[in-house]
Length: 206
Image (tube, rainbow, N blue to C red; front, side, top):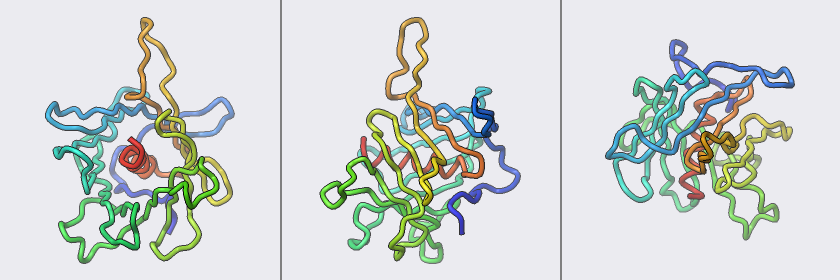
């Protein structure tokens, strides 16, 4: 299985592809670290045309054990759960779509493990992404600084497949700050999955 395969059904509206200065096609969305529902915490994601493409609404306070990424219409496309297995400490399990309470028949699609700097000589690494919990070799690595909204997702060949950047534009002298930033996803890598990684970085490093 490829981590860049689509986790959406074929009829779901996708963020629009745009062309970069280098001629490469990519998806660029603006991420707002705020839920559209007043009583919730979460995220709102819009594309370059101002369309709502993803949303997250969290009703519980503190650090939730589960996050659900929805499309603009509210349909779940990814479920992310914090692992309770001591062997997988610091790991989140990602499932496609919506899963039941106990996940007895569902298997995780991906595993994302937070990097522990004490055991890792490269302090620039934030997290590793695996296809299976038993894998020794990661499929993707996330580097940078989430607190500065400056991160890159690299594949096994060190090619950047997704990137988080600050929203550096100013409007009337007011900065967007850290609550609004940009997610850029290269063609061939699933934007929904990239947004799922953003949610997990927020849980790990906020």
